[in-house]
Image 1 (cartoon, rainbow over the protein chains, first blue to last red):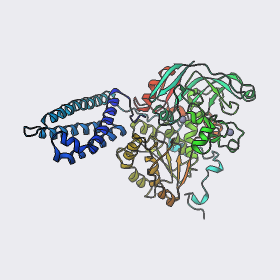
Image 2 (image 1 turned 60 degrees about the horizontal axis):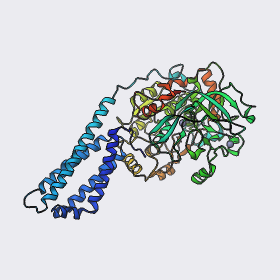
Image 3 (image 1 turned 120 degrees about the vertical axis):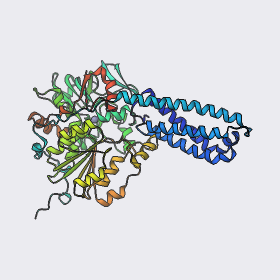
Image 4 (image 1 turned 120 degrees about the horizontal axis):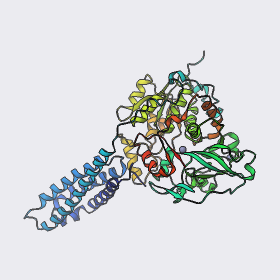
Length: 174
Length: 390
Ligand SMILES: [Zn+2]
Ligand SMILES: [Zn+2]
């Protein structure tokens, strides 16, 4: 199914990143503790779970909303948060420092993709924009609408489409 | 012959396919001179409607010249006749056809068993509109086989252009029925959601039928400018609150008649419910988006009427049914009983009361169809209605 109003490469990429977000988010939600231990960040398991929820939400947003741009910006901001959190765990006192570095590398790569995709979406929007057309001369009616009001009052409205008298809003006849 | 063929989501191609032939004695073959892309084709294009198969020929709004007639259709049609073909195929003999309920003809859907299972009872066969409605080849092609052709046609007299009468096959009677089934009274305010092609026809119909006030709701500037040209007061829902503005325009009482000319793919606005719908749809937990329905139920004046020409495909969620029940709203909906209206509407076109060609913004060759699907869906280039010339 297509959820996007367009099918450009940027849109397809955004959709891919949406699914990636959901996958990663679910992984973070169910394996938060294991992930935290792997990176020597045991106390941060709760935080990782919150990040997982954030990933799922942005992922659904990307798949579901017409305009991917705000959600892509959401991803970029989320990447920054991830990078900052990982950087704080990347110190000499952490015996799992190597693993944190691996994670940092992965997040940095995804960040680059996110930034690229966001830029592509914006560029597309900028080139696609044309001033709105003015169709104020397209009435389809031979005279101004006010003069045509009720011109088809004689039209046969079949009985099955009639409103029962009691439900009509015409001023009640006395 | 050449035709526009569905290959999958957002994948329509200009293909070479076998020419159609007479298969049943009531068939006719029509050489298409003009066809159009309808808003509901977009539900197929984006694959929101179930029942499409790779290789299906699209299109249900078309007209042309009769080039071959089966033995049993000869009483009604002859080679050379110029006809508009209504998108609802009707037999003219079943219980429903005899009542004029052509869009729920009991005999024209050749995949009746499938539709019976899904809907409880079958509805009519439609051209180029999924296998649930018969899987008939559509009219975005050089030639079309028209089943039950002795009934399923509108004969066009000379002196009218294709552009003037083409929409008798779908959007004009659809907009007209949407307004007609509101039984518009001279004191009524009619609010119309969606200013696409059907919305535009609905606006003019409501004016001609004599509504006191017609209010049109959309977000695309060019559609709103066309709506205004047709006599509507417009609301851009991205710039102002629909509920507040409708209350303001009706002295706090709400419109008597509300029309949903949007259907299943309502735009996801910043409202919570439409985001909820979008999210559920993205995860395939819901097929249709019900934002417009909810809004209509909310703003409509108690004891008022909701009219729904917009196409829905399946399930909707979180519909405040209690609100509708307690307010005593009347719901009227359905595919259009095209031939119920066409005699009257053809006469109105002939007499110059309306010229439906106002809605055409793009006219191109059939080969350019695939690109136009995209332009139309994305509402680019000021596109409101596309006509294709095979
Ligand atoms: Zn249609
Ligand atoms: Zn029938």
